[in-house]
Length: 341
Image 1 (cartoon, rainbow, N blue to C red):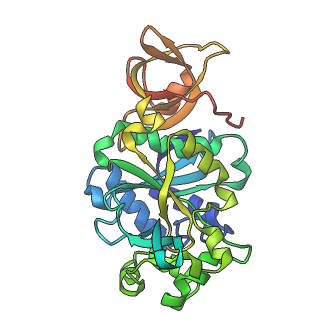
Image 2 (image 1 turned 60 degrees about the vertical axis):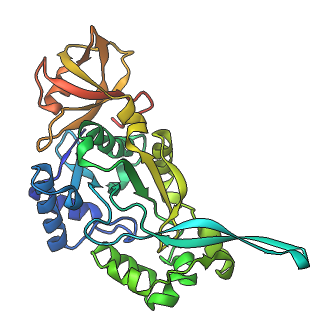
Image 3 (image 1 turned 30 degrees about the vertical axis):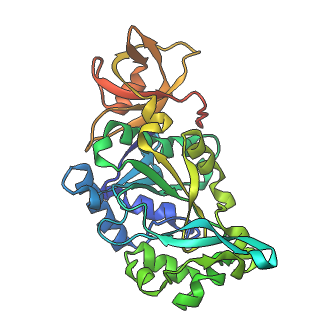
C-alpha cells in the first residue's frame, strides 16, 4: 500500500468510495464539481503554488492493485482567509457570601484561537479495510509529511473529531444550542460551514459566555465527547501526543485534539536515512517511510532494519517509494502497525 497525492484521475474512485457513506462523518464533498475543484487546488498545493493560508493537501491510500481505498487531508492554516470558530470550555465562579453560596458553572466561550494552526481533515477509509491498522497508515502518513515539511504548517496540528450524533443524524448539542440561533438543522449548518460559509457564525452566535447548565442533559453530556466511530482515530492521535485542551466544535460539541508539531511522536522521532535495498530479516520492525518529495510524495509502511546508519528495505518497498539505493528517506519506526495482507 502507498499513500500519495491525489490526482484528477482519482475523482471517480473517490466518489465511488464515498457513495452511500453517512454524510456528516467528514468534510468531503460527494458533489463531482466540488471534489474536482478541491483536487485541482490540492495539486497546486503539492506543486508549491499556494500560500499556507490556502494550502489544502489531499492524499489517497492506494493498494497494490492501484485501487484507491482511502483518502485524507491536511489544511495548511485555519482561519487566515475566513473565520474559524470553536467553543472553549471554562468555568465561571459566582459567590454570595451573605447567603453562604459559592457556585462553579461550566461555561462555553466563543473563540478563534486556533487561527493560523494546521488541521488534520478529510479522513475516510473503505469499510472493508477498517480492520487492523490500515487506517493508521493513512492517518499517520500525514504526520510524516509534516515532519518533512514543517515550514508549510503551523506550530500546532489540530484534529476536529466528530461529536455525538444519533442514528438519525441529530446532534443533541446542536438541537439544544445552535439551532436556537440559526433556525436550521444540524446537517444544514454543518454543510454550509464546510462549504465555506462560516461568516454566519460570527453574525448570529452570541459573543457572551454560555452557561452549560441551561442546555439539555443530553447536550451537556455530549460536550467534548467523540463519536464512537472515531475510537481508532482517537487512539492513534493520543499515541502521537495529541490531547484535548478544552476546545470543542460549535456544531456537535465534539473535542478538538491538538499537539505542538515539534512534540508529535512521528515528527520528533523521525530520521533522515540513506536507503539500502536488500532483504530485511523476519524480525525487522515496521517503519513508516517517506520518499522526501513534495509533488511526487509517496509514503508506505514496510519492514526495515538499520544497518550502518542506513535503512535496509526490500526491493518492493523501494519500488513503491520510487527510490534507488543511496536515496534518502524520512522514516519513523512504527512497530505497533498490523497491516492487512
